Image (cartoon, rainbow, N blue to C red):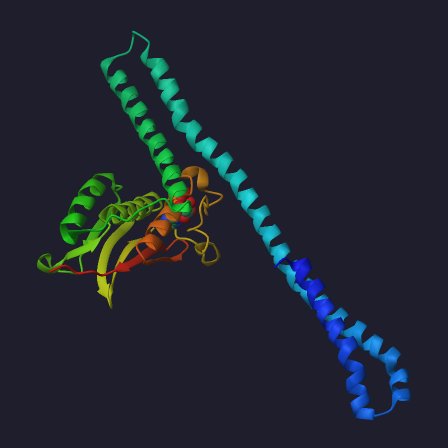
Length: 305
Ligand code: ADP
């Protein structure tokens, strides 16, 4: 029922009940009609005072809810504008590189090495663009609930071997990368959506590599109760306590001052969270600035014989 109808109805009900029953009640207590007439004014005041207090609290509660919704809408609008600026910047950078280097390729005086280098740069920028578009598609599908899980049985350790074989060539040279597996090769067949799991792990590993200059990155998993807990630990720039709760929100990039140093639109972790929610798990982070971060997530452990 709409708020205004609710308040009017409450007002009418209390008023009606007061008119009908208060006289009878007073008469029963005092047994004196004259006294009742004397009390009429006080009764009126009492009614006005009680309903005013009630109205005040109802309005206060309602306005609080409205103001909260308003500030949320303003914040979300601000985020959208920031996102549009951000995304335009992120799209323009690889686009400029594609346009610029393909223009240069038209020249006939290029050496073979230059040609190869320009093609490599165009190729890299095209992949960067493709990643942005893929992220945008993925987050909109998560938001509209348009994603179906595709669970299947697979060998977790082999899956990780394959995943890290594509990651190792990308690891920075001053970083030592290690993996710890929590199950034997004989007993690590599990059931889940391997595509989603790969996406989440890839995102976390890419971030660890992006935000760490030197030290270690450790990927591990272990069994905890009825869950598998995966962790990606790095010795990178870390995230302050206040900002840790924001990193899983979409379009959030928390290293404001340094953000120009790192590319990315701030969607990776929001996609991870969306996917882990779908897999019925939990995702979180423990981190300290300049000491490193540990991103962890759980998924239900469904062993397969
Ligand atoms: P982005 O595309 O900007 O990397 P993400 O959603 O993946 O977006 O991450 C959101 C923000 O969280 C990043 O901008 C970064 O500031 C912070 N972040 C993510 N992973 C790490 C990490 N391993 N170490 C430090 N900061 C991180």
